[in-house]
Image 1: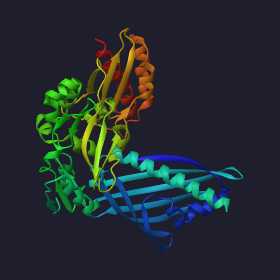
Image 2: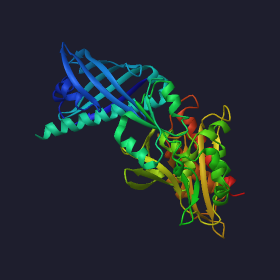
Image 3: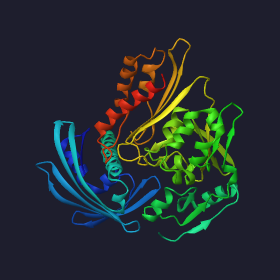
Image 4: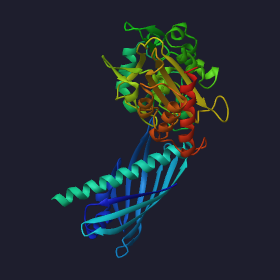
Length: 153
Length: 285
């Protein structure tokens, strides 16, 4: 499943770039993400807690920045997450592209390509798609808020 | 299925104590038609299962002092379908429950379990919304009531706080002369989940104008929905074919269906229009 989100960030292109490359700051914008560990070499590990009604997932997640090109404003984040107890996994690739709109605003486009495997996938792909879409929207909104808050200081 | 401890409290107070004690590790089980499937799939793995079958106080249908009815959470779908009291109160409510899945499921599944499961494609919720039903919720020593419209929050998510359980569904009195219907589009088999479903409740004035109308929709969003714009376009008007068709056309923008095996979102919006129009027209005959 693939979805695209575009959001206008209230900061200059370079600030937005440094923000999205700062994984611990972005991690704070991800609902349910806990215990981020920096493994070095642009690799991270964390746990993501997701709930859909009675189904509670605790996804052990490996995150890595697999591509970054500051001049082109493009970065690719790979996510490999699994819940061993319930038996299911999520593999996702998030491509982030930034482009200057005005000297103080930047357009951020996030293209997410995700696969849901195992029992989690059996639950109902259409619902998962909707939930994943909602989660990325929430992440983008939280990033916007975080940047606005740091701009104010 | 993983192992779990089974508890069988004899009273609601005891059950609520267990719900509070075990929190997220516990699951209440009523008819079990949803929970057992999810446990077999391994999607839900409670450490404690709290059986409700001894909670007789939650079973049965009673009139309320206001002239409505209260249906205990453990009342089965079949009991609602066959209840003479419900048939006198609002015949379309019996019909709605008669549409659910198969008789074997209706004999087992309960109204409380149904609303808590909160699958937006299930049959009772659209009718409960159209009847302005309220959900009665108990917790340790307290009871609160919230409108069904506020109870359903998201896919499989409801407004229950930790330590709470649904104890009853309360339906307020309906004005005299009000009629209702529940229709669903089942292109595959009779016991399938609906592609779209529509509950409509209508009261016409003496001069034939629409005095009140309430529309509940199933399988058309993350939760069962009301259709306020469509309702507003019908209220106070003579319900000619054109008025009904124009109002039903508005429902397409009041829904947010999923693309799935039962149809694309675009198709379901169109079917929502078709079945809303049919439901309203059937009440004018």
